[in-house]
Amino acid sequence: MQHMSDVSVIGLGQMGVALTRALLEHGYRVTVWNRTRLKAESLVQAEAVLAESAASAVDASPVVIMCVVDYETADSILETKEVIAALTGRVLVQLSTGSPQQARESEAWARARNVDYLDGAIAATPVQIGKPNSTIFVSGAQTAFQRSESLLRSLAGNVVYLGEQIGTASAVDLAFLSYLFGSMLGFFHGARLLEAEGLHVASLGPMIADTAPAIGGMMKNSADAIARDAYERPESSLKICAEGVELLLRQAQEARINNEFPNLASHLFGKAVAAGYGDEKAAALIKVLRADAH
Image (cartoon, rainbow, N blue to C red; front, side, top):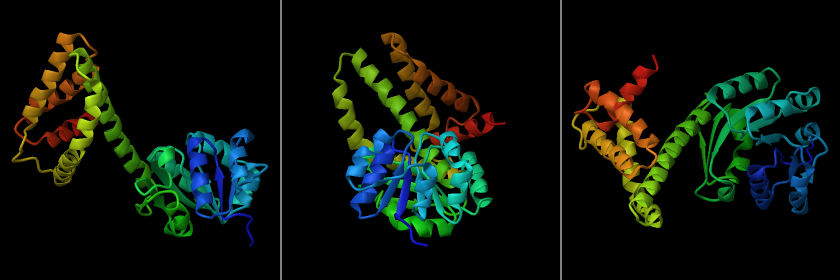
C-alpha cells in the first residue's frame, strides 16, 4: 500500500508541535491533525500535510503518533468507526500521559482491532525534543517498536525500549516523576528557607547542579538496597536523616514559614524510627511505605 506520509501526528499542543518539527527536520513526510486547525499553520508552512479529519490523518501513514493531554482525550479521537477502520494494520504510538493500567486497557483495545500498539512516555520538555539528552521510554509489542524505532530516534537521543509488558514505560515514567516532583518540593521549600534567612535564592540552583552527580550516586545505592532488601551497615543511618528532617521542621516553625513539606517528611521518617529502622540505611523507609499499602 502506498502511503501519503511516513508518519502522522495527532495532537498539536506544544509537545505535538515539537515532535512534528523534529520529524520534519529529519526528512520524514508528516501528516498532522488537531481539533484546532490554527495550531497546524506553522507546521504546514514547514511542509507538513494537514489532514481534514483524524481518520484521514490515520489513513495517510503506516505509523500514527498520538500526543494529547490524556488518554480520555485520545480515546475520544480514536473510538470512532472511521478512525478504527483506518487504524487496522497500522502502528499506534501512544505518547499521551497516562497510568500503567490505562496503557494495559489501550493495548487490549488495540489488539482487538488489529492495531500494533506501543505505549510511551516522554521524559523531556518540548524544547528538548530531538536533542541528544532527551529521553523517551517505550514498551509494547516488539513488532510495533521495530516499525517505529527510526521515527522515535529522531525525536530523542535516548530511546529506551523496556520490553513487551505494556505498562512498563508508564510505570518508569511515573517513578521518575515521583522523584522529580519530590525533589521540586524540597527545592522550593529550600528556596523559601533561604528567603526567610535573608539569603540569595539564586545560589541554590548552581549548588544543586554541582551536587547532582553525588545525589545520583546516592539514589543508585538506595535502589540497590531496596532491590536486595538489604539495609545494614549504613554510612548515614535513617535516624540521622530523621534528625536532619526535624531541623527543617524546627527552622520552618521558628521562621514562621510554610512547614507542609518538612512536616510530611517528619511524619514518614518518624514512623520508620518508631518501627525500629533507625539504625538501618535511609532506604529502609520503603518498609513503611510497603506497610501503609496493606
